[in-house]
Image (cartoon, rainbow, N blue to C red; front, side, top):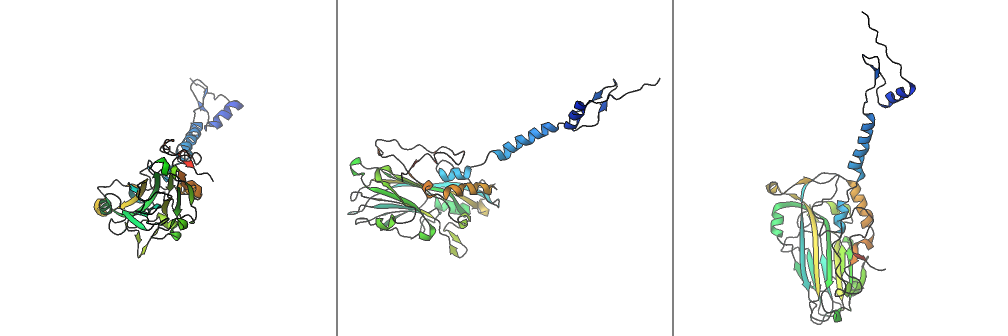
Length: 339
């Protein structure tokens, strides 16, 4: 007995569906009907769109986040074209500054280097014994610097900040506070009198009662290179941009100023410490650097007040900055200086 299996002709709409689904050849069944198999092509398009949102739609602002809020955003590495096997750590220093006998000014100097605890100090405070003078230095090292040097062989700063706050009585808060990020080309090892301090590029001045916070930022490609703990690079010494904040108008010989500074480092462990330090490759995302530099190029983005004009006794301190999800926002939760 002969059985004829006849392929049912496709309508125009069915042909269009078949082409859309990637299966132009109709599949005959024993019942004489055409079976069209879904190739899944639209699903693949949906998956591609979802993948794009997952991998490229959400930009990573972790590096910019760390520049804005170094205290809270730790463990961040600098995006690089070379995926270095590195670890991260954070150091901090706190203290108070006393004005000199007969002096009325103090200052803070912070360099984002590791130092050695004997001859190279990353944090210095200055005071003077005459009006406006800033010539007596006190040196500070990071805690555990000898252990840090033993673990790592190459360092580069990721982010840093420094704050100066008035902690005296409101009857003595009538002075001024000034701060800037000092370019490597402007750097002098010894701080200068108040009159010269305020003439340096990018300096912002506000009432002493408001306090001040200055964020560090890199200014040159060489700031991203790994150097030794003493900032040596071959036969030369690398000089980073540094934070300076100064105060004038204080009573003589009083301890009315508190300082706080934090630096985040990325470092290459030594061969003897590879099993002691958690190491991961640094991120490969130059777009992060571009976004960060667009923000950091604006001087006003780096200097903030801690309090409003009501002073620390009438206004609560600013909260720790929220994590940045976009380039817009309150830029670290700090109050902008009024121009």
